[in-house]
Length: 190
Image 1 (cartoon, rainbow, N blue to C red):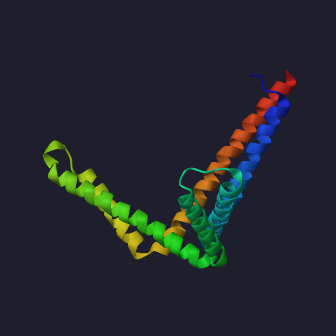
Image 2: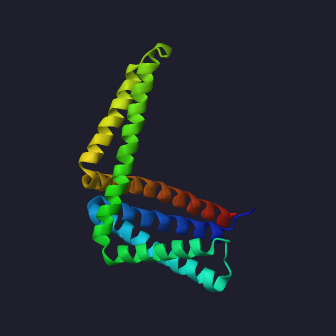
């Protein structure tokens, strides 16, 4: 498929715009991580309200019936209620959501680390060196304990780390937008 210079320039603009939005989100997450976490939870609350409303609308007017009518009604009503509760008290919802997710990650880290340590000790005859796996398991366990001890601080650190990644990825998008712009210029000159 031949690419016109106009299309390449539109793709370049859209890619650069994505990069700019990613850069701004990354800077916001790095400098104001607690507020960024609250914004993410608010966005989730808005999505839950929209999902609940559209689901109920679909069941009522859209003919979207799955055979489990009452299950669908209850699921959509619960989605709507949860979204409204998040929007009413976003800070409490943020604390509860972040704490819950960090505890899930901490629990999985403890389980994975414990399994690594148990299996490498149990089957140590099958391995040439066991210390790398033991070290990995110990790091997982320590990571899980640290998350359990400071869940909100851990959530804020994860948001900052995500913001740094967003900033790095935005530069990749800027580079890709520049390449698309150059392709558009090359097509235009032909």
